[in-house]
Length: 250
Ligand code: OAD
Image (cartoon, rainbow, N blue to C red):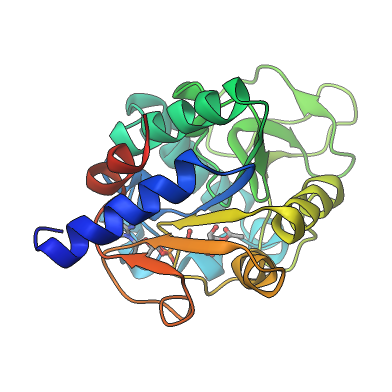
């Protein structure tokens, strides 16, 4: 983002954000890329490069090979716990404070499971796809506060004995209904919708910005690449979250 048109677009976007009554922000893996977390559309890294996430992040994959799926998530959890929020995450926390100080409403809807928005100080976060830092059991969803990583097979639930699994939404599983309903209602009533770092390929999250557009909201997209939303966005800012979001924040 360096030419005058981009500068003007960023200034227009900042004016929309600063004057908003209600803001909804949708984030995807792109906002955590600058913290060192690979996005989904990047190939799976390292020894997992021969797999697709669709082959690992499903209940069937876990039933077929619990140890392999548990190991993949244990590695991703360790990665997530070793990185920090970046300037993009922190800018969103400042925007939330600015909106709250004016008596407005702010809702952050994330598809990410890395917990970096909470770590950056965001308070009202709807985790549509769960959180990799939380673990529950496969059969009864009993939450597990601690577990041993001693052997390859997943640990077992202390209450029912079934395997533990990450508290994330796998392909083919339902999203948390309350969080999804809140996200859809907020998207239909907000006056500014900010879509950051998502390819917009996975439903139902991908429909949220279009619901906002259909309800008359101004939609701002932050992404270095074009997406299906770009052509309909009120303002499409071509750049990284870490570089662009601080320009939209106080
Ligand atoms: P993707 O990997 O599909 O898309 C990441 C988006 O971020 C792309 O459009 C990139 O261009 C953009 N991007 C990359 N670097 C960026 C940066 N520094 N700043 C801003 N944008 C950047 O990730 P998601 O859209 O989040 O679902 O994927 C959505 C869902 O698909 C995930 O939640 C996951 C996956 O299957 C489940 O696990 C259920």
